[in-house]
Length: 475
Image 1 (cartoon, one colour):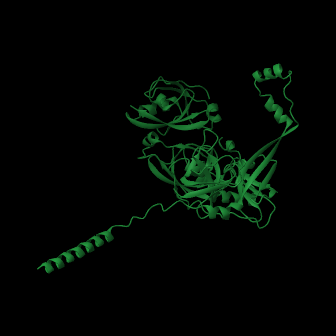
Image 2 (cartoon, one colour; image 1 turned 60 degrees about the vertical axis):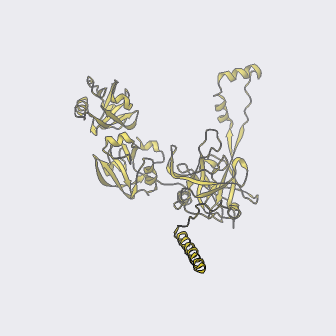
Image 3 (cartoon, one colour; image 1 turned 180 degrees about the vertical axis):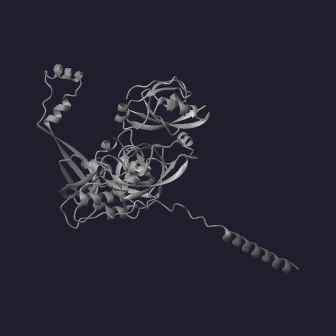
């Protein structure tokens, strides 16, 4: 009998072991998301020789220096009178301004890519390779809008950087920069991609790559590599309150940079598409006033005269939600897509007008070299006040013509009410109210009388030539 119990116990142990093994095999394997930090040594050895240091010299004549000296405050002039023998310091006939930056070689015969601001106004440009050779460079062309410049040095069989694709870059991906911060040649820093498609206030046409790679003065124009050793961006700017690195850096996508390079090489300049509208962001209040469920798109505040947009039938108050198949979520996205279209090419535009989608086709024009060139009555009675807290008068034909407006009334007083809360000020020209043109004080009074009792409506105002929609919250 004891033998029987021994065998039964053995069977139970084996059975329990098998059950445990089966249950363990059914558990999903947990692959670690991070297997270790990357090793950049081979990448630096292979791609480092293609990265160059760029130094420039700019000559300043005595006249420009004297003009600067004339701007010295009177307090300091008295200092020179008292302690300097009554004379200002002598001005040399010529002074030299020097600067440093980075770049990288994109062809074996000596084409070098860098930032425009690295070489802007330079009289002499010198490129220094890692093998310590120094070669004078010629500026082939530069583009201020994208901050890209193309240089050429005499050479053959030069080391060339491997060009990748910024379109394939993903947020969170490791990236590495090589450059000359503060003049320290061949410095290497690494980090990750923090975001893509960043828009900066001073750059309407560049969808920047944001990284946390340490970038400092002197890194400008240097390459940003992915782990494959391919250039995916051109280091260009930093966000800083101190002048040094604070954790936020921006790079120009290499796809855009190489398109600029191709145009500079072939034509010496860059041609961009032009739509001819002034736009603004759609916030929550404006979205409500235009009947949108959520903020999206680029709100057209003005259509420029004789522009492609005017010819296509785009109107102030339209919200552009799609351009050539690309969804427009923020107004800052529209200029970059328009700029990529070749002039005299048709583009499909989707707008929301009066709460309904409308498809338009526009023939894109050529962006003027001077953007300011592209932006270009008797007195009637004032009404006695309104539910908005506004008083207005008729605008004279001369006042409207000066701002290229077809209609509008001038704000003469702003009292407590929705208009003041929205930011409307005396002197503003009220162009439309709730999408109704304001061609007279009577039209204004009629539009106010027809406003809903509650909700939000949009008012288009023009302030010193700057059009802007403002949301008016009705009580």
